[in-house]
Figure 1 (cartoon, rainbow, N blue to C red):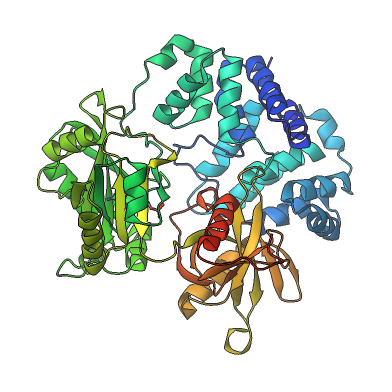
Figure 2: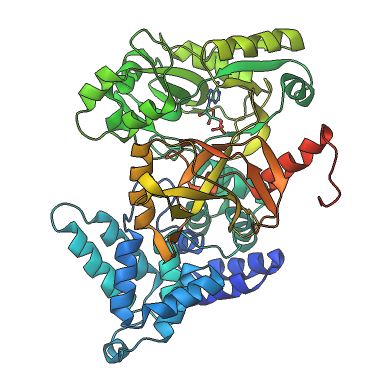
Length: 565
Ligand code: AMP
């Protein structure tokens, strides 16, 4: 019996209603057990708020403007109902449910249609993503309208959450790993490892269901399926890194560029961005150089690409982003903005998975296979003075700082651990998400130029405001940002526009203060947008826990004012 989408929506309602992790895991595990094999991956993806598995390159490409128009049309209800519900819950899904409950259309036709199943919803989402070419917009709208017209209020709530990638039930990927382990009677570490290898927890659950749990113990990477990147934590200085790594540490230049993951098999090369999107066609020069240099016939490698001037000196990051986004005149852009690749890791070479090997061995294998492509500039030392000098050299050469890596550490995909530490010289900027914006004054009165900045609460998935700024962006950037923000605008009142949290910006500041003004009770002082981070998603934004830690750390040097918590 195919599982109904209603059952999935009911499960999500129950999950959202509890804060008990064990209960969430157990409800989800029972649900996973009840699914058919082919429903498993789609259901897991949707429960996590994803239309498709992570490695999949498909995108729905639906703007909030389009979606809200369809919601209005499908319900024919007063939009004020949506806005009121949104302002009391802050949740587009719940506001959609309220709207659907007040529909003025008689749903007679629906009585005769069959209820939606999980498989049908996935098929619909695929059809929406695959629509392209002339008339694509109208076709997308038709498909969306058809899908939403079949939905009950609760189903519509979760469909909209999936369509906007805004699930926020408190069930994050870590808990889904636990639920998968419970459902298929597997050790959690096996599930976690399989998730790192396959890059998608839905596929792990589906594999456990169809191929049996033994299969999960022997998984390997698949070439051309990107792996989630290993991430770095921040260290405040060289000494902290040396203490953390207990002596010998690999220090490397931290290049201010974009990370790429290279997949090669025989003559074919594919390059993925940090967000795991396929950037191959934007980077023909890099692809060519990989084809000409990489020795291994099969390889998964990582490196950082920077933009340079014609004499090879690094130039600002925004130029690099232009190369990544370019779809037309690629050859021209490649000539105007030359790129330089520095390799730093090897995950897989000729059928062998290297991630459990110590970093020094992976790097050795990398150097044997890199041809003429340079590796990141590196020293291995346990001496503070030598490392400090190296950091100064990195900064003098126009780079961001250094990475300090534990030479004995494995590669842990998708985790931000302490094996890699980034050290920059200034207060570490924060990656924050824009949750609202206001129109400016004077010259800027038609632009959304004052931005509310929020950090992520990993517990709830909500975003908590920690500051506001109108500083740092160029006019062109503000104009582009205004257009993007308007596409995701939810409410507009007195020149204040709330938006779906989508856009990530890197923000510098000089202090974090206690403040009753925002729901986080903290406020950045002298916040300034350093740059846009189109390579990051809201899930990659810094957490409120990190902000609190920085707030607390300030008091190592300062006294505490009486009213500060
Ligand atoms: P962040 O994006 O601030 O978390 O810093 C980590 C990023 O620094 C990585 O994802 C890489 O894109 C980049 N990076 C620059 N140089 C290196 C290096 N030598 N090793 C690893 N990552 C590097």
